[in-house]
Length: 358
Image 1 (cartoon, helix red, strand yellow):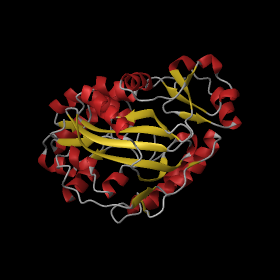
Image 2: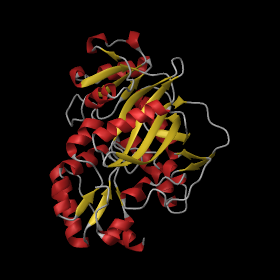
Image 3: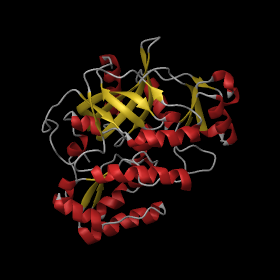
Image 4: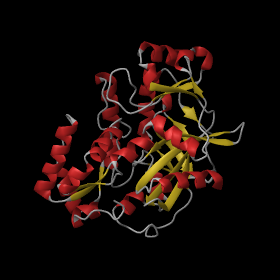
């Protein structure tokens, strides 16, 4: 761990553009030796997937699938088509011309991830008149978006690690508190709510892709119909990943070469991001909507993602970055930022060998 800390102090990357970012990673490898990256942010992960072969030739091993597969899963339009093909329910879509307050609540999602004016970088929930006025004022290119009915139920995350399409280990969790606008998860707990038919369909989808790596698929449970609707997929690390780790399902360790059975098994632990509540109030001003809540579960001991012995400095500093975003209009080092930084694997930094899942 000491070597990882020293590398973290000396190795800096630049994110001015894709070319500069990739060049900076290659420079780090040239100076410090080969290393593996476990990416979490959407923009950085796409850059690494698109340049994966070039990076690997330079001793940088991003734990991400190939670019075509990444886009197929991460882009909303192609993901929805795959879900229909494999028997997964998807939310009802509205024609762009039908956009009005009469169809609220609804969600606006980009069809594909584009760094273009008029295209959202992330989904936006429109459930109030204030949120509707805001989305209209943004003058979006509606042809570049999907407008779908909001499913009135809790979010379920199915998290998995695959090797050549075979599921190695999985974890399921339920979202109990979420920021306004459908943004970051603030509170979550383990869940076993997904029926076998749904998980079988998900596994069949990833088997068809011969997928290797980690993924998180969000589904929504509609209580009225007792059905689960596929919402989106992150073929990379995700926000409340710590909940899986606390239960002994250590996806980062698996990407670094550890066996799925190596981690200690625990139960009854929940996830919270308390600093994110402050961030949520800032987003409430921005999105003109409220927090999304589901009844808390009993018998769960909730642990904050940052207020731990090894990350306490981040817990103390994060509120200052969040407050700065209110005055300067840009996220600092907050956990839920659109382009969160990546995780570096200590094991791979030491051994300089790519993971068996790559």
